[in-house]
Image (cartoon, rainbow, N blue to C red; front, side, top):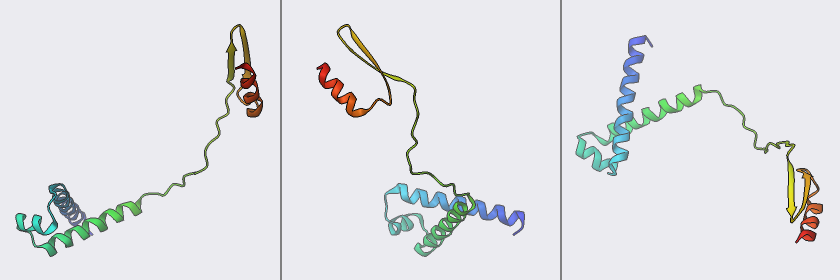
Length: 108
């Protein structure tokens, strides 16, 4: 396809996409909107089909990037600081959870 034909096609598809968007935003059914705008329903669906195919073609042009579904584990060097009255206990953030629960039970 030469450059001029390609540009004409892009402009036409953009106009058709705007038409579809207007119909969607109108809240009217396709038949109501087509009747109101003097467009044959078959013409509307033909244009809708062409817009969808163009969009699918655009999606296929993009590279697919894999996404990891496993959570990343952040390593931190922060400390847990517990204070009760005048007593302050500093613990590493990787302190054993069961031991921490027992310690908290004692401090109550």
